[in-house]
Length: 213
Image 1 (cartoon, rainbow, N blue to C red):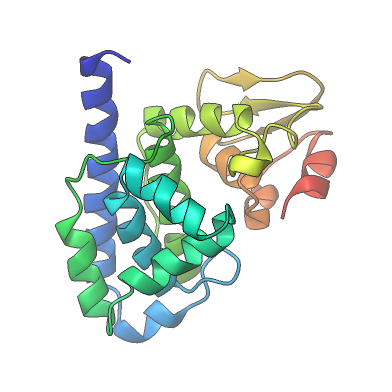
Image 2: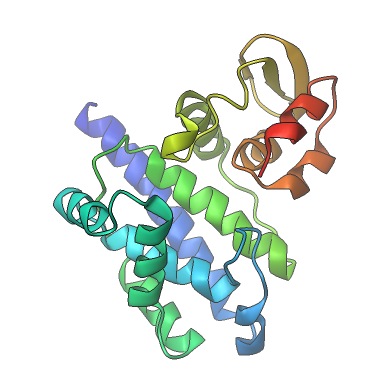
């Protein structure tokens, strides 16, 4: 990837991190315990996960995965435990300090957009916050998710028999029964967030729902 393209992606990632910090700064401490859209994690847990992923390096990711015996869920759980502060204020400060980080695991840089947008919505939808995401960030994240196997956190298998059509972007992916809706809702749905299915229409919604976590 050319350096200009990388800088452009990092600008989007940093903007999403900064926006989430701003939103969380206005959230009452008690609401950090709210269950997020990410199964098993509270808002506080998701924020800690985002701190952990922002600090992840290529070598650190591989070493952590080996220690977790290649169990991604265990690796993520350990990251949350490691980065979760004793209070929401402490975790928020940790998140604020990593806004401009540019380290990443050994994966496509667009995974950073998936992290920030999907987990940003895990938090925001749980506590009633709304953000208008840059279309490019959402589309890039969606394109990556649908070509990434489920074993690596993607949705390649889930969308194998449907066509995703964004109603707010020039985007159509796949072949089969159509699933139409906002790009953000498509991204969330293929990322296993069932709540987003209510935003979608078309004969492919049923098959897609059957594969959602």
